[in-house]
Image 1 (cartoon, one colour):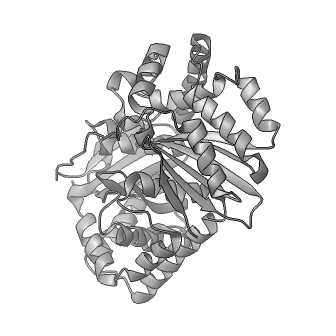
Image 2 (cartoon, rainbow, N blue to C red):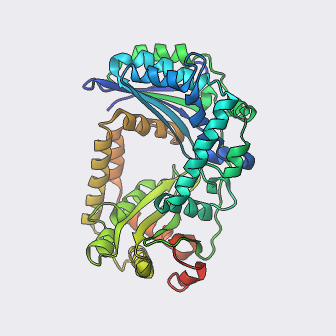
Image 3 (tube, rainbow, N blue to C red):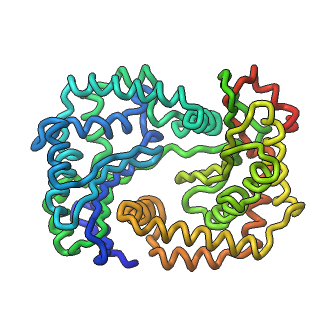
Length: 424
């Protein structure tokens, strides 16, 4: 899969990925700013702005006008916000790419930001906050992040708080956009059945007048080597939820691929060690698995499990036993383990890249955060090149008590209930 990177005169990077066997195309506009760039008093503004741009723009005056324009060409549109980026996309028939550019550019670059729309959308977001709090499977991630990155903007909820959302005004949105929504802080990715020359012409026409601006930098997080930290949120539920995680590697760390393969071996897929030990052998959980979350300066190697509250100590012991067991060579990684993990990563990546939105994410994320953009084929070669010694070294580095944090939701009084199982 080949791509072309073009930088416009104002600094906007445009990535085109032709996929001529398809009938569709996708446009994604990435803004390299997310919740960790926000002032405390404006927490949640990145996510709020993602919502409010779809309520009316210079050409498409109302939310209904935008919806009608999208529906009239059979397209789909959405947006997302993370700690480090915000994205807006339209997926359409290939022959509707020009109309899709027109809609997306007008929404993002020319939002009306009417006070009445802002006030109305506050109610929507406040309901979203309530929904998160009422859903332990979603809430547990917020609690874990709050604990793990306490004292840094990275530790705040992406959605913000009730108080900050209520306080955000049109003036705040205008200031935020003026600061961050600049050409050098954006990337445009377009994939599918496209003509590259036409895409570049459209990009220049719709985004060429953007102010240049600068690439934003976030305040770095530094963790201190201490004893494990625990956060418990009491909830009278029939299922407890936990995330047990270790500080890991940032987006550009040289051993990030080895870390990713380690997460596959430990807890991805139905043949992983944790799935086998916790669900298949003992029937202690329906959902259990590991994943890696990365940021520009740090990462987290986390394991989630949803279990019967009475079994939580057993599950924690099993997760720690398997994690520390790899690090201590009690449960050594074999060449067979590593080969299976490599094929898992390559296979899941290949399957995802059949979708143009996933193609945009593959290339967009690399353009935002990595020193160079690799193709899927180049990525697969890098995965294949990882040696077992690298994975073992990563396990020994990451799986240590000083890097451990744990968040729990369930019918538990306080954190001291877990001191013994964590050896605190």
